Amino acid sequence: MSKNVSLALFALLFVGLSGLYYLHFSEQKIVYVDSARLINGYQGMLDARNAYQKKAQIWQGNVDTLANEVQKAITDYEKESPALTKKEKELSQELIRTKQKRLADYQKAISDKAAQEDGQMTSAVLEEINAYLKSYGESRNYRIIIAATEYGNVAYAADGLDITDEVLNGLNNEYSGQ
Image 1: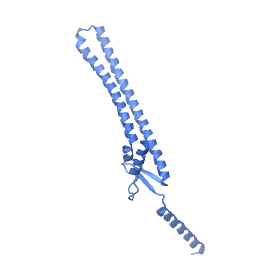
Image 2: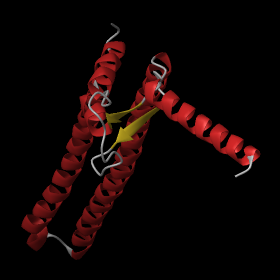
Image 3: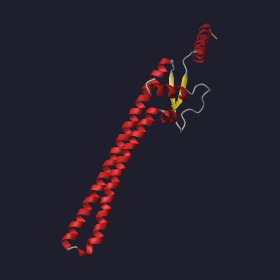
């Protein structure tokens, strides 16, 4: 083997070992959070879900009111139908169809609005969490924070690399103004 090849192999070995040493002994770590625990334990998400549920209850109350109006119109029509003229029957049937259409239109509108508001709420909360994770990671000099899901992403992690509880405590403290 020539001297240049030996020197190149030595340099390559030195660089490789130096890199491994740096990765092994540096303070910069790769850590992870359990995203489901983080999201479900974040008070901001819990508050957003409660606010959404209150709106959903109001929407459902409106749907129930319209459905009751339709049912009452049908019941009234069935009771009064024998005594009604042909023209009165047609008007009553038209009124029922109009109420049914109004109910269906309202249900669709509410369904669309609920999906939109749920998406906006979730997006806003995830932006808060991601911003916090970024500042948290930068302040601790982490190279990367991985979000583990219920479906995997982290097959193995050494003890001490799951920072979910630390992040969750800090996130909730920041949310509550502490």
